[in-house]
Image (tube, rainbow, N blue to C red; front, side, top):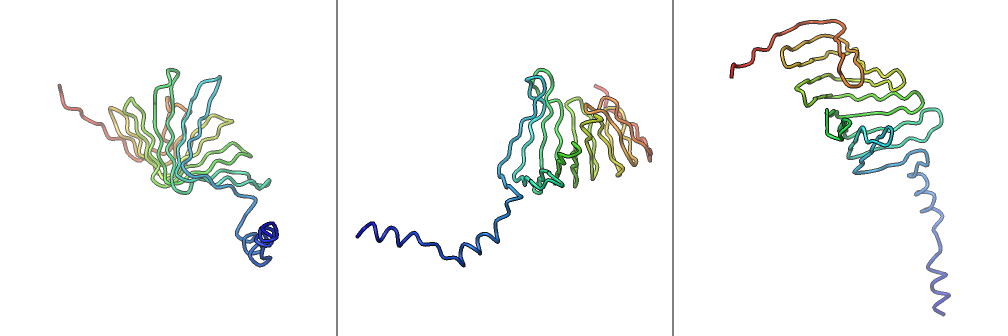
Length: 174
């Protein structure tokens, strides 16, 4: 008798199953509290953290989106943080290895360099960071404003494409 009750309790309502299938999307995975480690030659080079990640599995445009913001910590060869990048939104397109961050993008290095812009792209294949948006590049001795930027991944050779202004920064004497 108990077996008959258990079997009867396992009947699925077809309408409820259909409603559940409509809400599920087998082309999108959701992850919360994400921490991704990127490594090269068995060394962690980047730690990426985000509150939410959508992993789109569509063959035509496989990508990972970070709609609630992203923070990236770039590590040097000693595994110390060399720079940090914060943005309100990010997308990694796997098909062309292009990472785009936008909305209040701030990159800052430990040696007092700082970049502020609304959008920044990283082409992994060409090892090129670029944007055509307005940028503020702060160095220890000056601030450069302008439109467009190209740089190597470590920002050692960053250049503003259309300089709008260059402001020397005077530091107080010690």
